[in-house]
Image 1 (spheres, rainbow, N blue to C red):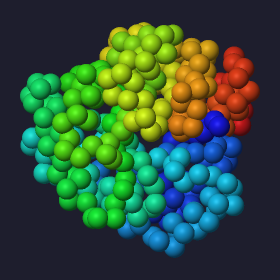
Image 2 (cartoon, rainbow, N blue to C red):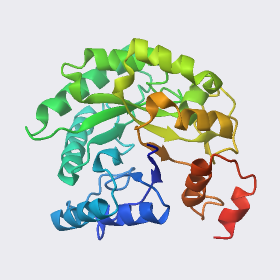
Image 3 (spheres, rainbow, N blue to C red):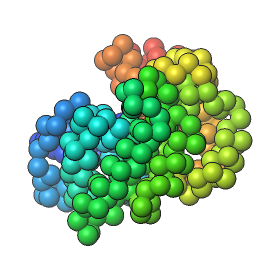
Image 4 (tube, helix red, strand yellow):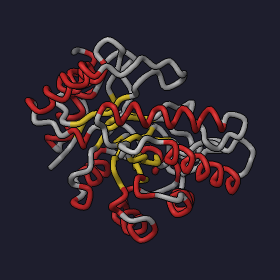
Length: 294
């Protein structure tokens, strides 16, 4: 079954219920959200009443809770020794918030070493994850999905070797997985026209069973640019057909695919139209103009 959705909003007044309603307006059957602003620590308490209403509505809409994703805030950087204690504490708190919502997966950017070097950065990530997992309450079963990165600046996680190192060295990696990002993979230097080769290598090095989510984005950049600039589906350098081959890959059939494509003119959400285009399996060259007229 195709699970296709997008990034949606989350606010303190409606919380996951509001996120769900936005996703349904796009005709999505899964979605991803932050539990607060990604750039700061402002967080409102999780309201159990709103969560219950969201879960009830999901049942009505036959939406699978296990296909819902939360994204960790960008301010968590386990590589950075200056803010290491803050990052581990905030990651632990975020894992507890995700658990309170009943969500299974939290996507996390591995971090940027900011001059410390890759080896030290990797070890700091491993240390931070060990601490975060150790500090969780016994009933917390949230899985962290390490996102594949574009290699911008001093980002860690732009190749399988680095992702594998983290997973292999975390003491209890039973709740550790991977989120693929198509724009990031392209910008990191992976040829997505040969995606089956990449999956074969991934399965050999890490195990395809660890893939819990895929961010579906086209890219504004050429392969190996290391820039990380998302583009709307079919309008970038990856292209519609290549992305469709990834979305409908049989080995990834039941994994949620999440659109993080940019708003058109920074104003109009494209997700309803992109989801429709993906389901129809036909590229619409007039998509941008249609979105502007919504």
